[in-house]
Length: 129
Ligand SMILES: [Zn+2]
Image (cartoon, rainbow, N blue to C red; front, side):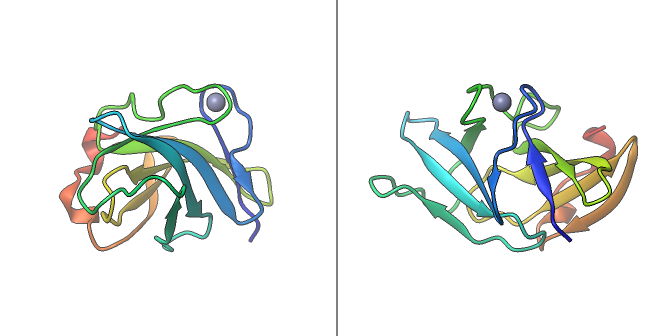
């Protein structure tokens, strides 16, 4: 299934083919480009050359187009994008902004449709909605 990811603020797509490209900034002010796999449950991430984000770093992810934060939701550890599938159905996808933390939640309306990753139990989905 081909998925498209949109910024929830400007609704521009932030994926190029099967990679999602965002800007990541640490609390200490380091900034870089972060590239994730668009495939659900694949937690491969690449970072731009001059930046080393280490496991456990909290990244503030922002949209590369409108520069708005993707994390102004109830849990600051999670970022959100809109995911659009082949049939143009839109769902919200929440994922961790902590480097090395593997969790993804797919929400449709007020319902959790699917979750991925070994760290999902650290989050209470009721607090996300
Ligand atoms: Zn945007």
